[in-house]
Amino acid sequence: MTPLLEIPTAERLAEMFRTLSDPTRLRLIAALQDGEVNVRQLAAMVGISESAASHQLRNLRQMRLVRARKQGREVYYALDDEHVLDLFQRGLAHIRHD
Image 1: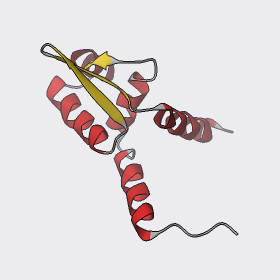
Image 2: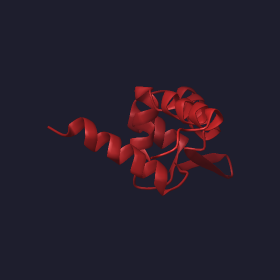
Image 3: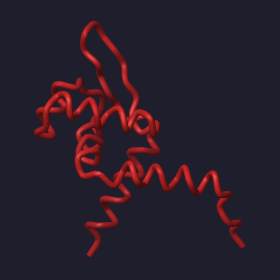
Image 4: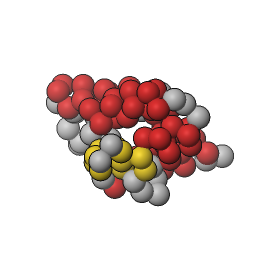
């Protein structure tokens, strides 16, 4: 029998899914599937302002779903690791499944 989740683990998992429950954040994750992109490009790809993109990316970064790298004045974002991509792709496959 699989053990129940510890309460702190369940709370962290629920918080991660709450973070992923926003369509704009999911679109940002989708835009990062192929690799690192700067904030200006991400905003244009998703169709939001740079300020809104930065705000949403901050939320994703706090949950360790994306990571940031600064180069001069530009901030580049990438998915934090392969688990984020896997989670996104599996969720997408699930909702697209007939």
